[in-house]
Amino acid sequence: MGDNYFNWILSVPCFYLLLGCLNYFGIKKAAVAPNNKFLSYFLVIIFGKLILCVLAVALYLLFVKEEKTIFTVSFLIYYIIFTIFETYILLNLNKNVSSGK
Image 1 (cartoon, rainbow, N blue to C red):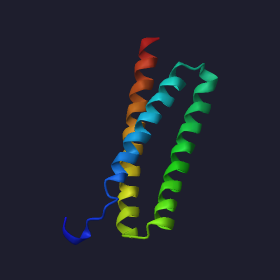
Image 2 (image 1 turned 30 degrees about the horizontal axis):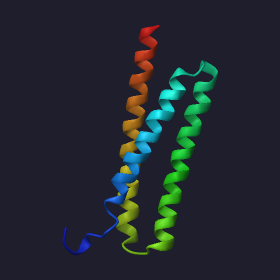
Image 3 (image 1 turned 180 degrees about the horizontal axis):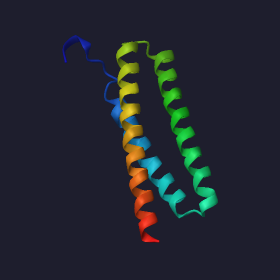
Image 4 (image 1 turned 90 degrees about the vertical axis):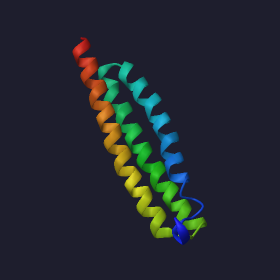
């Protein structure tokens, strides 16, 4: 990676791995909740993910101040990929629950 590599680059995938585990348990709890609670749980999970991501980027930009552009772009790319993956998993979960009834 040469001179463009920075020490915090591995923190981005680790952050999303941890966030993915938290989302899995949250969505699993939401899936067994009554129908009127599922949407509330899901929206809280999505909003919480957004807040955590914005907070992580803000803290990095505030304290580290090293390779800001690379970190922010890589974080955005991971956010988009993670959101697509999360949506795919949620749609499959919904399809499996609907076909099971």
